[in-house]
Length: 432
Image (cartoon, rainbow, N blue to C red; front, side, top):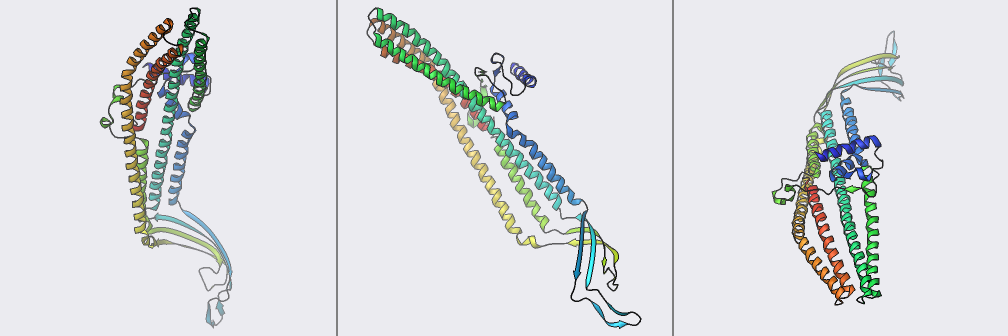
């Protein structure tokens, strides 16, 4: 409930302040799921959903207009070298023949009655193509989630390194003060002080580098979610649920958007195959023609006249039968290509999930030993401090033990973040 309240407050703040507004660092604790949702809404590619739907509506509207009456206008003027004429003269009338110069302007209206299912097939193909585009869009948008995961956990890793760097600098400062005090008792000399100072400067340089990297990651994350994030914004470390640690073998089937995209391609091929039969079915329609010209329907009358004609037209083209078998074989090849792509994707995805499952369990085992390693390194460091105080160990050796203890603490912190990152990456791979 607390997470949802925070998310709704976040959305309300966005509406009030604007998408690119500055976020107060002390009023917001960003969560991974929130960043994923905001990135999905803010990513420029999201606008393609509306474009796909608009294209689908236009194509369907265009296909449906095939049932509307088709109007055509034509005109011609010709001069012929020879025309039809009677081989004799009619008494009282004389010679009868068509003029060599002929003119005609006409209009024809056609209405499809039955098109062999071609218009319906075009609609189904439009729907199938639109579904493929929509599923491909989901695949592209799903990739944004992985990029958010990488940025989010990258920032958490940097936060842990900065936190351990602070601890290291505190340890080095205390060591510096002790070494300065040892100089008064002749246990240490100036070179020992300089050695500690060098380690302090190295730690300070490391912090500058970490801060620069974190600043860049924060800016990239802010660009993805549409927020102008402050450099010191805090991220909430996600907490895995119990089922997040289960073995890959116990998980259900993979529900990635790529699977839906490949299934949509198979359905599109099925629609294309069913549309092949429309190429060899008959077409039936009615028409009305009207024209004005010389000659008219009365071929024996050398004069301009108007006329009309109405009727039924049946056409049956068998030319598509020549390529029907090859068209079906081509679609069958495409169907097998989709099947191979799906099998390869599922195989590679499961392999990746198995690798991540091994990483999760391996990191879990390392985390179990991290506390003991830190405890032992702490004992070694304290023993080294006592030896330096007694003059039986050099300051350089003490600095080595301090760095080793700091490395053990850093390893524990990084193992924890890497463990979480692998869990969420596995969730992404399986769309769990």
